[in-house]
Each structure stands twice: as structure tokens, then as C-alpha cells.
Image (cartoon, rainbow, N blue to C red):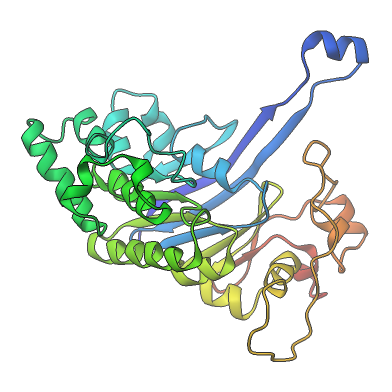
Length: 331
């Protein structure tokens, strides 16, 4: 399968320094957070790549970089063979944004409370000039609502009149309005109850089959990731530490951090398999560890891990891991 999205060495730094006078008085230098640090991956057309990791690992920053909401410090993104970041800054920006949309994490905050559903879902149609007049726009809004399981009568309601799951369906309808090929989904079910999560996830899978959509799905919930993904990328402190097909991640994880994440999930089958609990805390991103960022929490770390940063390398068929212990066969 050809890759619709190709990300290469993507990075984002944020200057979080105190005001100049405060730094002068306290004799402090600038403070910089490397939110994303050299991330590379590809998403074949019609598939789902899930990014997982603890809070603060840079997943949502990757989503915002891909959708042009923030500019990268370095790296490139190619969309259908073209330089996406260059097109965002060109006259073709509107055309490429029609093909790429985002579903935000919080359905309570991402919808304008003063607009009706008709206005919310119809806004992309109006902005991109996809319908000739108001009557055609209203008809298209009703079609989009029907596709996500809502009725025509819902078009004249306001967001506060809906449940969380229904609001997220409205967000999905808005994202689908421009008939995109690629959807960036930033934890779209994390604010919902478990039963409602299943409904929204099943809806997204059905839409993917019907429309051939490509997803970047960001989540910290491994059960959700197992349900929706084709491949999984595991992030830690701004870096990808493992990238592999879903079946390999869940059956034979290679990186120690991936193993710890999976060991934190309750063993409902009571298999008796030895489990290593997640140890320690995520390091301060303002002062990340030298070498491998995971080495302070890793039971397999040695002197090389503390001094040398591991690169994401292919170690098996379709599996890439950034770990000296895996490379040296110490696991």
C-alpha cells in the first residue's frame, strides 16, 4: 500500500522561559521544552496508525503539527506525495485543508455553544464553497448528521442539548463535511463513558470502511488502540520508542517501556504471566535524561543507555525499536 502521510524527523521546541527581567534578576537562562523530538512514520492509505504514551509525551503536539495548527521546529510532512507544510503556507492551503481534518479531544469545548448544529456542521461547507446556496447547505448538513446517527430535527439544537457522545458525533459530522481523506483524531473518546466510547469507535470504523479514510488516532487507552488501529507507535518524552503492526505490539512487545504499558493493563484471563510494574516517574521535560530518555526507569539500562541516544531501527519484519538492549540482545 502506498503511504498517504509520510512524516520525517518532525520536531517542535517551545520556549517556556520566564520574562526577561525575572531571568536577569534570578540569573537564569532560557528554558526550552522539546515537545516532539525527531519523530518519523508513514501511514498507508486507508489504514489507522495509533500513537500511544503517557500524558505529556508529545502525542497531541504531533497532531497539531500535522494539521498546521503549530509550525514545526524542523522536519517534513508529505501528504499524497506533496510537501504538506509548504502547501499550508501557499495559495493551495485551502485545497489541502479540505482533504485533511481534525477531531478534537473534548466535545464540550470544541463546539461553539452559541451556534446551532446547522451552523457548526455547515461552516466548513460555507468556508470552502462546497455548496451553491443556503438550501443546498442545509440539505447537506442533514445528510452528514444522518451519517453519524443523528436526525434532521437535531440541526436546530444547540450543543448543550446533547450528551457527550452526541456532541462527538457532531464533531465527526463537521470533520466529514469537506469529504476529507485523512482524519487526525486527538483522543476523540477520552471524555466519554465506556459504552459511548464503543459507539463512537464503531461509527469511526464504519466510516473508514465506507469512505476509505486514513486515520492518525491518538490515545492513552490501549484497549481503544487495540480496537481501532492497524499499526501502533509508542511515544516517550517526545520520541518514538517502538513502531510496529498492532498484532506485534500486543503479542510480542520489544521495547521495555511498551512492555511496562501493557503490563499495567489488568490481566482479565489470569494467565499468571510475569508482569513488570511501571516504575518511577516521567522525567522533567525541561531537563531530560542524557542518552536514552527511558533509562532512569528501565531495568535493563547500562552505561551505554545512559550516554548514547538510541535510534529507531528496524529489528524485525515491520517492527522498529529505539533500544540498545534490544539491539544488543540483552532482553
